[in-house]
Image (cartoon, rainbow, N blue to C red; front, top):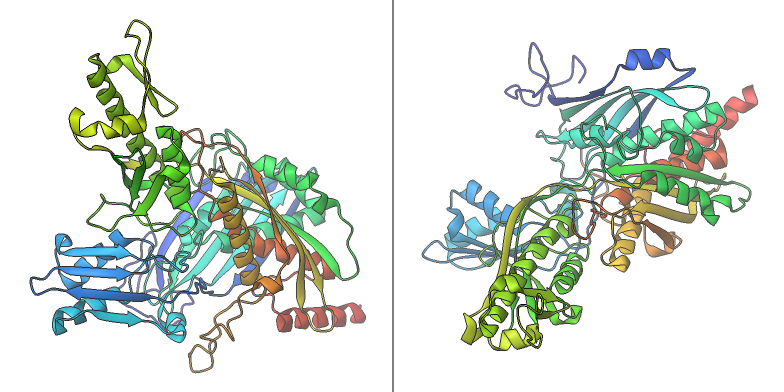
Length: 611
């Protein structure tokens, strides 16, 4: 971004940014609310800080892999590990000039993705090679290739300015977020800016972001893309503000909590949300009141992700024995199949064990947007619910045909068709299994369908508590206890929701303490493997306690909110705040690895000795 910086692409035209010549700024975004100048005038305390994060990888265990087979007539079949088979079909078609109808993509069971498998790498290459040799082609990345060739998330730098009254009411926030995109535009700068201070009801906000191209691999999405980065800055400075004012860090968050009717700087006015309750539950939790020992500290932080809907389609087929098959089009990366089956079973009035959920390939189901944005249980779940209702409508019509009454005179209750009233007739209820058995005589197969572009995603909020112990001799940090409180809407499958919360927290802890791309003086990645790129393992951590706050989303029949991305947002700041509590040293750059923390502790000790 400096005036004398080498220009990567002098033909690139920036979006939302005026420049007189070539620039490395690919995009500029702004979100504003109120008048920040006026807000800072009203403040009794104003703090300004800068923060920095490094690029990190999603860390999925399964590498990218594909098998492609192109027949002599040009029909391609692709089997791959992906978060979106329709996305693969589209990109392969565009890159190779093939019609969409000639490409069939089957998603495999996935061994982790976290956003890193929402793009294509090997799929077009394997397809092209297969078309040339006339035989199936298999390609698998090595771990080193995964690190060197597939996108990490962005590194970034941020400047924050916050003002508040002596009573702790935040009057204004200004922030500038700069994210590295890699060699091509596409850093998640807009979500980073949207999420930065979204947990708070602040009248005056101005957040701007820059998508900056640099000579590194093109970035890819990583769980709540951009949000953990900006939250590291926002939640760190809120913690510093609380200390400046002598306030409890959770009380200042509760005082400024967003709630129903709060207008967010990025546009919407929140409906029913549970952020304030996550703060209350954290304050009341015994973790927050537990005593700490020497070299130990406690930190808290909050986080937000807006969640999305999008295009989804689903089919519910009633089998002849009264069981059902639910076909959806989103690879399951977090337990979504179980949740879809549970909602279908509820609508049909049958046992969950009688519903078989499967993921269809691109020829077996209508278009579905990829698995990402915490959208599947919400959006595809809504399509499944409506498809099940379509099946129920058909079941009622079949019962009406058997009873020789109007379909309007039949209701569905607990898996049975029943007369709506005694005026319709005195008929024994017909079970789903009975109606399925008679389907050949009453009109043929019973198949419910639904396809829609789903709107109304409910935003998610979380508040985390983290206890650490810092070794003053080595700078090593041990996570002693971790509690994650989250507004989950309604938990359709509570154990899967708990797993999502725990997994997100663990990834955020790794991002905070160890993970980074390390380049040598020649610009070569020095740590392209799990030996040198250190992700947390089970022995590194305590049990992550998940506390679920259920504030249903009123725009979904089962109250669903996305849950998978929110839990990765608070941990980096929660860990940083805990380290500051334990040592008095504020770490403003990630990762807070032992060498970096030890250097900061030594510098602080030297400064204290000099004073």
